[in-house]
Image (cartoon, rainbow, N blue to C red):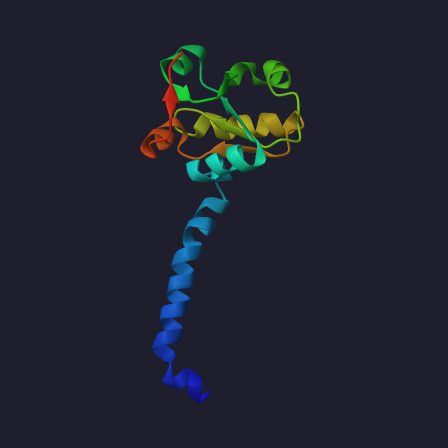
Length: 135
């Protein structure tokens, strides 16, 4: 008990810093979205597949390098043809992240259990200075 009394300030600092480190995880837990850095990690290490769910004209204007285009309204029909292996991580991206969140539900319904939305969408991808290509 003497230790806690003598070192209360250090204990408070340790608890505060732990809370600050955990805050982004706790805040993002309800969203079910992935950071762009996490997406790049999954693409590089786990062979994740990036699928852009924006419309073809939006996709042609600029998209992440290596992304496949399957528009949200055609996802149920075209996703099984675009990504045959349902066990690989499936990363869905759109302009801001809202369409990708909806696409996750559809992908999981189709059997892609590792489907995740990239939080912030293409805007976050560009903000992180990650490569973009145009069709």
